Amino acid sequence: HSAAWVRDSNTLVVFGGKTGDGAPCADLRAFDCELNLWYPVAVSGRGPSPRQGHSAVMLRLGAGGDATASSAAASTASAPTELMLVFG
Image 1 (spheres, rainbow, N blue to C red):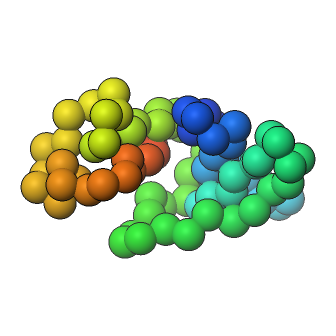
Image 2 (cartoon, one colour):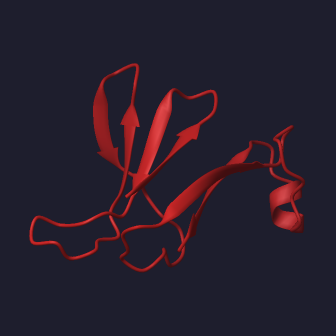
């Protein structure tokens, strides 16, 4: 699996890994460190295929985030968008 920290929300997002029988999976879950609670994450669009042995990074776009948004939709958003990029 891979994990990435969502800045300012005390949340850890985890993607992929293996099922109990060793098959790769495409599960996306988040852990709220303040509430000590796991929950599923809603995905818009098609997510990555099931995988294991990969890495990921969290990127913030728009509204004073760390990255410059390249699309008009992202750059005009009033709230930042968190984007998890999965590699491998």
